[in-house]
Amino acid sequence: MASAVAESELSDVDWLVMRARSFPKTDPYSAKAWLITAKSLFPQSFVIQFEFYIVEKTAKNVDEAARILQDMLQNFPEEQRLWAEVQSILESLQKEPQDQKFSFLTDLFAAIPTSTQCSMLTQVSKKIPDVLERCQLLLVVMRKFPNLVPEHGIKLMETLVQEEINSGVVNNPVNCYRKLLVCDVMPLVLEKGGHLEVNMFQLYLWLQRAIEFYVSYISQPNASTSSSGETSSNTDAADGSRPSPAKSRGQAVLPDIEMQVPDPWGNLLRLLLLTGHRLNWDMEQNIVSRPKEYQIASLQHQLMRAKASNSGETNKKQILHTGMVLFVYSMVHYVSHVHTDAPGHQIPVVLVEALSGPHMEKLSP
Image 1 (cartoon, rainbow, N blue to C red):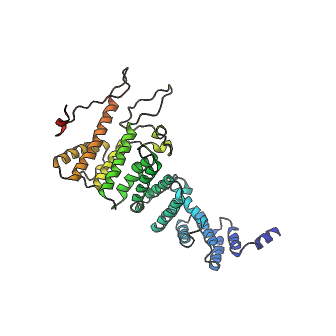
Image 2 (cartoon, rainbow, N blue to C red):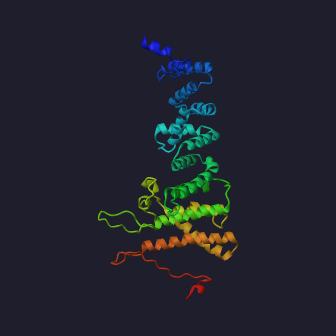
Image 3 (cartoon, rainbow, N blue to C red):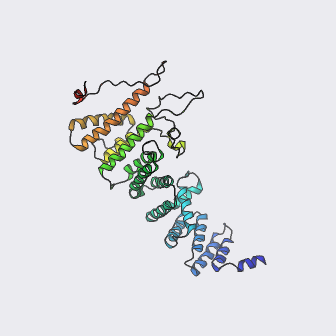
């Protein structure tokens, strides 16, 4: 009796949905039959269409679930329940692909047309208050779907630069915004961005930010300590085996593991080469995919050729940036191999053999 009274209080839409849900998951066709009837009676009902989506999602029907989701996004853009589902789909893109649950949601997102994907990203990003989380979400999606890089890449880079300035950490290059910019977003945009609507001046600014970050990251004191309380040596600087800079700099916004940069020199050289290709520097076409040692040797030859050609402003900037990176690399690499274990040696020793140039005589006393 109580059940009959409860059913009588339901609206027609809710009653039809209840009838569809009454069938076990092993009988989706009966549930669909009720929902088809319900949809024909109430074609503008979000509740019925969302229930249709749940049935297809439960049955792992990627294409059909994607089609219904797209229809709902077009017809019911203000429904909070719908956007909660969209956010869970986008969050699944950051999870391990081996998980079957998240794998289905990733496939579901991939089956949606690009225009709808962009709409989902735009709307969800507006609802995420934390800028860093929003940028990380966009980064994950661009990695999975490179066709979105041209549309969102430059805007994402500008957002990170502005947020770094707004947060007041711009004077400390080793921060979460700069790390995300130069380690993750810049390489992706420069490599997958196609034709970028950005001027040369902006490219040089981004490159300078990258050099500043990596040099600061590599040259900072080792923050890890041994069990005796003594600070460990700095001999890993050349190969990038650095401790997390987040704690030592007070910028632990990202987890320690995410502030680690496994191969800073390799990453910096790759960025230098990618930027150089964008700026039409004189360099090998496939050098980005070569080993680090080969890249360094090639950059040295490239630097000598650029100095010999002396062909304009672009040439001078190529010499400046390439020479600066190679000089700092050589210096840090040398320092990391200097023997400083003798008593009294508290600071690594740097040996500069010679600095020569057409204007060096003017600097002599």
